[in-house]
Image (cartoon, protein in one colour):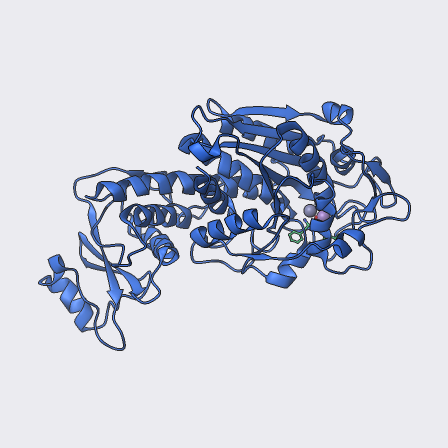
Amino acid sequence: MHKSIRVADAPRSLHVFPVFSAAGKSAPRLPTTLQTHEGARHALRVGAFTGEAGSVHAADDRTLLLGLGARDGFDLQRLRTVAAKLGRALVKMRTTAVRLQPDWTGGVRSIGEFEAGSAIAEGLSIGTWRFDRLDGSASRREPRLATLRMWSDRRDFRDGMNEGLVVAAGVNVARAIAATPPNIAHPQWIAAEAARIGRGALRVRRIDAARARQLGMGGLLSVGQGSTRPPCLVTLEWNPPRRARGARDAHLLLVGKTITYDTGGYSLKVNNGMKGMKYDKCGGAAVLGVMHAVAQLRPAVRVTAILAVAENMVAGDSYRPDDIIRMHNGVTVEVTNTDAEGRLVLADALSWGCKTFDPSAVIDIATLTGGVAVALGHFSAGYFSSDDRLAREVERAADNSAEAVWRLPIWPAHRDYMRSQHADLINSNPARMAHPIQGAAFLSHFVPPQVPWAHLDIAGVAAPDTPSDLTGSGPTGWGVRLLLRLIAART
Ligand code: BES
Ligand code: MN
Ligand code: ZN
């Protein structure tokens, strides 16, 4: 990986030329400036370079051909994954300066220079990231290279690259937080990290356990009570100095599940199901990544974030199955399963957040259920919405970011499925039907009905076992790009 990536020119840069592959067995068309280039022509003649998406070929020591794949079906996501592969090739070649030669829009009318530059920067930066904070003295990884400088002669393309770098930095912030192990990333560490991210740009506050008790947050407190590290809520507020015309009283609230470790509690996770549960903070990590970018992008719309932070542990004072607890909004919940903890901390955050901030829309993001991964795999997140207009915003943002979502229903029957004999609600129905919907239906009891609400269940996409072209293996930072586009569309 490079220590950092910047938009800057440098002498003796490597010139990178985008090349589409051609139909059938025919050779791709070279850019005009390379049509008499001996090395490039040779590579095409012998088939050493075909323009396959993400393939690279050094035509000479300052000229790199980069395959974009077929013109058919070319889009921004292709550009991102191609750039991710370019980035990994540049690291191998120890390249520290590139000049991106035209043309990256492929003549596709809907892709502008700004969008292309931004997709390439996202791909380069996301594709070359790795978690290196805990590299030790026995690390066998390649050394970190100097800054990568990238340049284009087009101003709008460079502007796009600068924005893409900010977005990618948000994604990588989310991934670094997600990857930080539970012996380091406990609730107070999360709060400190939030303060660091917001410094100078956002108002960051903490609702500690004592205050949560005064506020009656039985869900948050119960989940966290078995840990030596007390639970908390963390809020980060972006209040723009100038608001966009249509966004005068718009206020978006984001809520992230931030379970720093999920053992399941007394409903203990078995058969190695606990391994990887450091990723149970990925919802909150994504929200922090978004706010990191918001602090730099300064959108003309008000955005507030809440992290619901706790560690779900086993101890003499942990909460138990059969406990009945009272939540912030006065609803009582019979705990049927201590492993359905995410909805308990989120419920208090949603209820308190809607009451405190009176948002015009609220979106929560959470690694809530293994069931959503069973249903949708790593192919898409599951999402739910009480409001069709907000649902369309989510889908449009998902299209733009190529982070796929699939809507699931919440019907009155689903809400009734969460009723308890001894209290208002149960946190999980022991009949084990429709787990992702159960989680969403439970949460719906804690959002005031007049507030448009969407719930993203990212358990299948936050840190899948299958590596992806863009992010490789490990945490993906899923949702950061989607939410940033949703915010941008509101300005
Ligand atoms: N954090 C888990 C969900 C999860 C599972 C995320 C696997 C990523 C991978 C959540 O707290 C949980 O334990 N959910 C239970 C719900 C059940 C007890 C109602 C589940 O999915 O089994
Ligand atoms: Mn759990
Ligand atoms: Zn969990």
